[in-house]
Image (tube, rainbow, N blue to C red):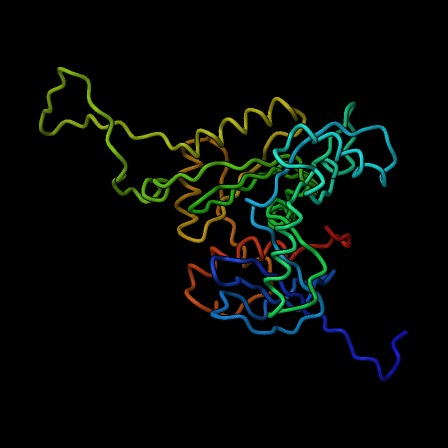
Length: 325
């Protein structure tokens, strides 16, 4: 019951992450069960300023946390987090007392002889810094989220739209500094991996010369005009994607990958076409703005920079979990 004189809580949801000396942000009208949320504002804030919202989610930088995988101990659900603290003790390079942990089952409730847990281990100081840094924008941060679950949300939404919700699908987020791969089935996260950035990927996807250093030719080689002796360079990203797919197929042979989605702020269609040619796996570009109602507003700030900064926030805006990190 709401008393008539009590303030009405805003239904709007604010998503924030720190990008250099600015904040990237996404403001939606809140999650809806039967229709997509509307994107109200998004982009890069030129300076800190309050944004009214009913609740706010902050996104940690990947450098401030790890995702580890451990066997699920035979314990009640409410004791798993405490057990995980001891399980990862030798897997991290800091005192576990300095970490905030959360756990989630690999594949959700999927039945396996030996179930496993994803353990998210974040530096408590980084969480506090993130929350403190957003204080001038909002005091309503109630959840701290991570990139892997944000990307899972985008992938799960697109898989449902493509009638692939029950199949295993993957998504790779391609950024200038790092790439992130996730595999999901039935809206659940099964696999995730961080992959080093591939600086020459976009040039190869667009058929442009790669500016990387040329390999030295063997002694005795003589150039003949008109001859094409330059073999195309292999993309480090595609090599690592293939390795990850091989691991997936060995680990989950009952769930073959149906599709790979490529997410990029720039030339996603060309990148998807290149990956499909090299891997032989159906690959399409995923538009993160398509997860929201039609006709989203223009980005605030440079459009390409804003999209690159806001892609993980757009995924976090689709969050439906109610627990706090």
